[in-house]
Amino acid sequence: MTEQKKRLIVLTGAGISAESGLKTFRDADGLWEGYDLNEVATPRGWKKNPALVLDFYNMRRRNVLDAQPNRAHYILAELEEHLDVQIITQNIDDLHERAGSTKILHLHGEIRKLRSEKNERLVYPIDGDIQLGDLAEDGGQLRPHIVWFEEPVPLIETAAALVRTADIFLIVGTSLAVYPAASLVDFAPWNRPKYIVDRKVPPNSIYGLTAIEKPATEGMEEFKRLVLAG
Image 1 (cartoon, one colour):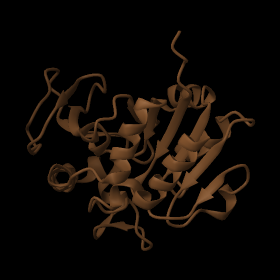
Image 2 (cartoon, helix red, strand yellow; image 1 turned 180 degrees about the vertical axis):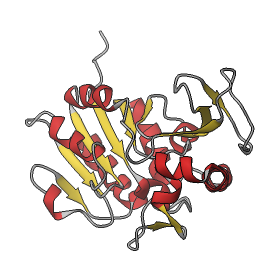
Image 3 (cartoon, rainbow, N blue to C red; image 1 turned 30 degrees about the horizontal axis):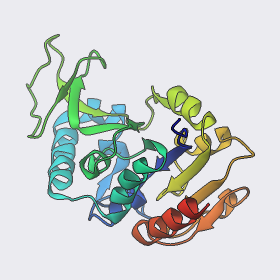
């Protein structure tokens, strides 16, 4: 009889994709590549200037298509040979998928998808640009399939339920500053091993977590050795 694999639940953030050349979501000045987040990542910004928002995400989509998965992404895919790996990502890129991971929940949406502004269930794939006047079948303007600030996170309860099932819980490349995603650590079983891999581990997250304070590519190599040795 085959032994059942332990369940590894992984929460990933911008730090895992930074080494693939994708900018982290929020710089110290509150800007994203020179853009005010209030102008390009809120429903208010969309209503005020949808053309600016579309241009911004068209650039992000091109950046993602030009990027390649890095070693940290590939290690998570490789771990599926040994563990039942479920990834919950705050990232809107598809680098986990391209590295070969098979179970990924995108909390904040996906840059290679778009949807009707009238109906969030009308979702379509896209690799090109979205323009003003591009309409969904319901007549609504097409917008990025992204969860903006000030919008609810539809999959947060699904994610919390997954974290509760963890035999091992791992956080990679996130400062645990964006809520409600940061609250997911609270749902991990108290008596299961928990790890955090990040360049700068946030002080308030140390309790109960084994910290690996390294960039994602280096830290994931260390995590892989630790978890497979145990």
